[in-house]
Amino acid sequence: MNQLKVMRTVNVLLSLWVLTPSELWAQSESEPTQYTFSGQLLFWTVGVLIMGIMARFVFQEQIHERRTLRRLINEIGPFYQEFDIDAVKHWVSRCAAHVWRGWQTGNMESLRDFSTPEFLEEEERFVQEALANGQARHAELDTILKVHPLGIYMVGPGPAPRDVELMLRLEIKGVDYTLDQADRIVHGTQKVRQVQHFWLLRNDGVQWRIHRVWEALEDATDLVDRPEVPPVNEWSRPKLDSDDLLQG
Image (cartoon, rainbow, N blue to C red; front, side, top):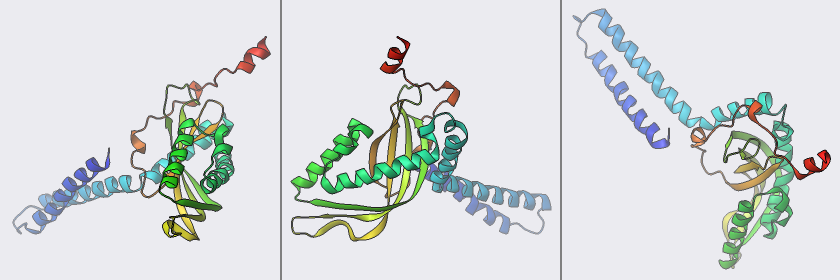
């Protein structure tokens, strides 16, 4: 359910909820007690439904984080090491240092073996746009405070783990700002501050590759619409050239 549908549903339920107590308060003393009880029941039922729908929408990330953690810890991690949550956090911590250094230098070559072509192309486009505008980015990673796994889903035919994508929200402390030609700050601040980024990791069947990184200015609201990964007993590693050599 997208944001528009959620808000329309909430508005309808809210209208019913507002109207219901008016009916209750307008009852005369001659009305039977059963009608009063039914009205109260309807009033509180609609109220609970409204709160449930709003909570599911507002706290969607938290709900998906719990589900994703359960799958990584209990189902997938024991059989595919790179999906273990501690392994994911370790991989991201090492990779983040290269990402921030790439932002500082304008060169992501150190990530070529650990990223998708799309990631490198997008970052190169950002660099060229900044140069064309006479801007320079300064980035220095301080520490990663927390890694939130928001969703795990399929982005291709697989079979899993190939084409499995993992979406993360990172809480980070660092210095990240952009200067124009006159050395005026056009984005960020020169002080150490806490920022949040979304990360997309894609698995090539053997290892993770970073696919996209961008600032998390709002919640991810489309997680429920993404195709889930199949049960782990349907997963299989891709056949490598080295397997043929060993068999030969």
